[in-house]
Image (cartoon, rainbow, N blue to C red; front, side, top):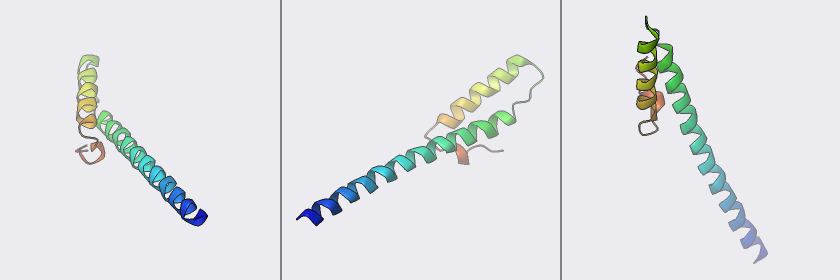
Length: 72
């Protein structure tokens, strides 16, 4: 009985850790998307640069799939 409880506890810990790792991956993808997108925001005026950065924020926060939607 004690071994069954230990096995169940270990499985629950593994599930919790794997779900945490998935969240980290999504965050990294969003950061990579924003970094890639804003690198292309070299505009002649500060106003256009700010507009570009806002567009990157919207694009990269959509659905959590930022890394594949950069276009750069």
